[in-house]
Structure formats: structure tokens, C-alpha cells
Amino acid sequence: MSRLHRLENAGRCQVLYGDESGFCLQPPLSYLWQKKGQTVGLPAKAHSRRLNALGSLSRAGCLHHFETQERITLSKRDFDRFVALIDNPKPPPELQNAMAEYNKLQNAHPQARL
Image (cartoon, one colour):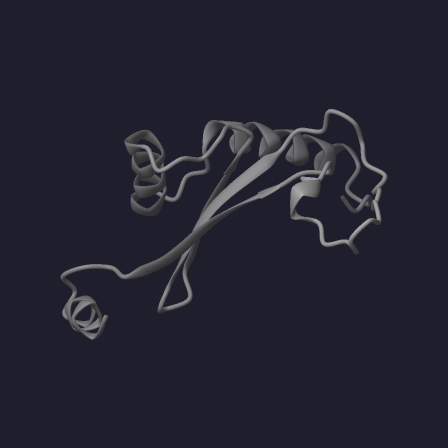
């Protein structure tokens, strides 16, 4: 790691620490801890969509991230999408659409908090 940090300090690379995660209103119960013989139930919205997020943080504190309802894998396509985001911090199309809708609502109702 120290070698990479030295290269980054010399301007030859950028060191990023990354991770992915997913969020859903219907949690996977296979990851739920419960006492033996006890069944735990959680109220949840049926057929909710999962939101997946991929992000990285630089040593300087710069956060890069994108969210999608598609599955995030270690595929070249996902890696290329993420690198493109770092090189050109423009949100992916699905996030651009959501941001456009948000801006329309904010303009129509400036006093509302969303």
C-alpha cells in the first residue's frame, strides 16, 4: 500500500478504496439472526426493487458513487462504468432522470422539502 501511496503522491496514479452494497425494503431473511426454534417475521413491502450502489473514496476524501437497480458484478462493463464516472463525474442515465424529476418538483413546489 505504501508504494501505491508514494506513486499517488507523485501524481502517477489515484488510490481509491471501494465497496458495493445493496438496499431493499424486503430484506433477505437468510441473513437474519434468530434464536433456535424461533421464527422472526418482518413487515415488508412485497415485490420491492433492490437498489445497488458502488462507491469509492480517495485519501483526499473525494467520494465517487453510482446507484442502479441492475445487478452489480465484477464484470468489465460495471468496472468501465465506474471508471468513466471517476474520469467524468456525470451521473449515469437512470440517476440523471431521477435528478431531472427532482428538479421539476423543486421548481414546482420550492417551499416543499423532499
